[in-house]
Every structure is written in structure tokens, then in C-alpha cells.
Length: 91
Image (cartoon, rainbow, N blue to C red; front, side, top):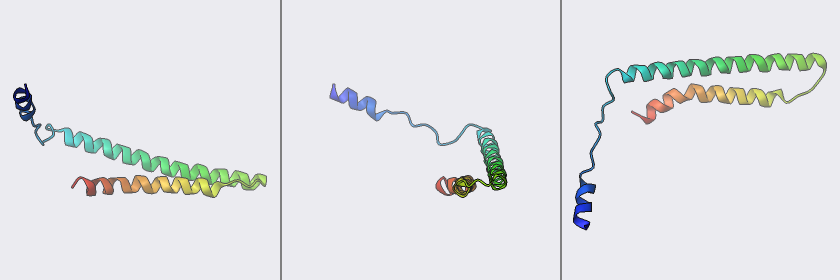
């Protein structure tokens, strides 16, 4: 019983290390689209935060817009550094 179990465990198939033809281009296109969407979302977040700051200033209200702006900028930095970081990891 032990010998047959070891035989089956020793014959585990090894998958090939290559991706199917054309898959790399599609993955690259999806990553480019995601990077573009992240950049657009960051710009939109900065514009919306600036508009909210202007409206609050006109009304005489004080809000914590700087923390919101900090979160938007941190998200922009995360989106901007994701591509180079992934390239460094998977090289």
C-alpha cells in the first residue's frame, strides 16, 4: 500500500512554464487598462476633493479635506507604483 501510494505521489505531472500563445498581449492590455482607470480615478478624486474644499470654504464650514486629499494622493501613489513593483517582483 505504501509503495503504490509513493509511486502515485512521485508521478505528479509538471505543468509547462510557458503561457499559451497570445495570452501575454491580452494580459498586458488588461493591465494597461487598469492603470489608465486608476489614474483617471485619482485625477477625478483630486478634482472632487478640490471642489468640496471650495464649496466648504464658501459656506464657512471647516471639514477634514486634507485627510481626504491625503488618502486620494496615497491611492495615486499606490496605482503609480504597482506596475514597477510587479515588474521588479516577476523579473
